[in-house]
Length: 217
Length: 217
Image (cartoon, rainbow over all chains, first blue to last red; front, side, top):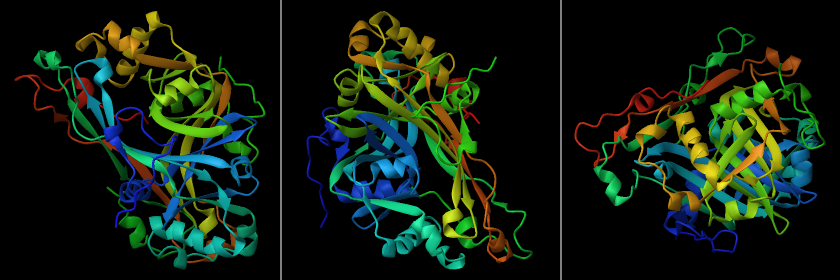
């Protein structure tokens, strides 16, 4: 059964509400397709936004950093807003303000709770393996000192929404008579040729999770 | 002469400070290479982050939206934090926590000031022409009603910093002896084939700013 998040005063879309989605399937697909995120938090009443990576396991999103970092220290146990956004295309219209962008974004609200020490390793392995299937088992295991110096924050996906725009430009009716090129310029994400570390041992080849990496659709 | 932003308590990097940059050239190059941004603001003491587009003219960054939108109404005249981030590569190490990402990011702090009505059209044209050189002159001109319904917010670039990571993984010395593939998987941004609006008039061809679009390096 599709889970639907309850609309709240923070997540109800005031405008263009037909672009809003509250079903977990839509929200999770966007989170899973875009590891980069922005975490917003408040220090002394002022806003801060830190770009970082997020990953999802079940009902939670996670992000991590040095336990000493300001972003981690100041958002730990506090209210945060986490957003991800994927640009799929530039939407070119016949007038300036009807230009738009095809984007998929998610905005989540909640309290950033630290992951207990005994669960950190499993969470970090899931982060690595989510992007690079099988990689965590190939690595030198994470040690206790590294885990201690790392804080993982988590937020349960309970309050949030997705916003999705697709399709071509929507112009004022009379503007369709103008000889102006309109349409969509799709935006793509790719990867280049892997650059091996010069200190790799002889004969060590790039694994499938590197050579076969594809951005999720 | 290179302009350097003064470090403040908000922008001084506590960790890995060698990755921080305060010179305007570095900051401006990143802003100019990435139109997508995240604007953080505070409502009733709680953090909100809205993904939107930004553009720069001289000493100011700008972003815009419907005057009725919550993000615009609630950040107008208020303290905001605006960030942009570009992912250049995944940095694959020999242990999990030495994995990293080559990124270029900018974090700016300031007050979001509304652009006066009589300057809105010039600012919007600059936004369009910044991404699509010459396009604003090809469009149906923006009308007074559209300008009234649109708020442009601006922030002077006075407090902020850039953060740049480049290069390969940095592993613990003893881990270089392990037969693990390490290196960088470069991340690229591209565009697909332009999709013309089915309602384009016959004979209207995609202009050079569409067919020749390239992401800035």
